[in-house]
Length: 290
Ligand SMILES: [Fe+2]
Ligand SMILES: [Fe+2]
Image 1 (tube, rainbow, N blue to C red):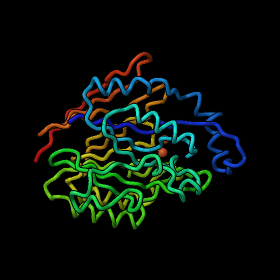
Image 2: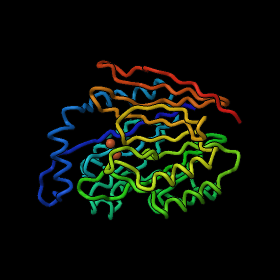
Image 3: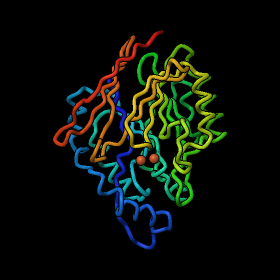
Image 4: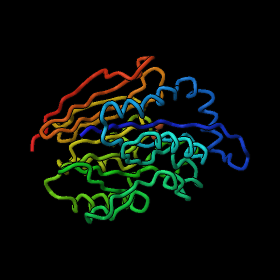
């Protein structure tokens, strides 16, 4: 099974309409215009629908930050873009998709990106991202994607996520409901490791890390948010294989991952934009013991 992991596409509209311009959105818009815009290029994204087709991709996991300031127009652009990708997709929100208190309260992300469900075939599939902050999708025989929403609306200068007690409780319950011998890809916008930037981290990330550590069935932890591509096999430390897909619109290093999941191994091909085309720049093979 071939799975794409992509995150942080950040479709952005500059909108100074005072009806939509709260303080946080103004700060985010100025940050985009003054700093981020020069480092970003959305054009390479237009090649991906065709490339995914030619690569025989089965599933696309979209790890949040589809927008910059949660404007309806940004969600509409993102929706049009992902509609052009014909494969099944699973979406989670990032902090930029619940950017303002209004967007968070209205659950605006979910109006455009609620995941379609095959129907409640398993008790774990009762849980939804929108209502419970956790969702389980059976993606292949013996494999589940468990998706998390850890993106709250935050104060003006914060890009934090929160692993809340409620989501922690729900995640534990979902994990307890899944077949005990099945394997899990855990999809979150935020890394669980704490970084040195106090306003850019997952609050209570240490609790998520402890839960992941106690759950060896979680074979992969997939995240974005950092805009820095990373692949790290932390199994010797009792943790899963960590895949940070980076940011596919960054002009200096646009990236995403292709995870080729096979019976006893997974090959992860990291793709980057070389200025003219998307090319694999490194491949990692992970053996998967049963
Ligand atoms: Fe981002
Ligand atoms: Fe983010």
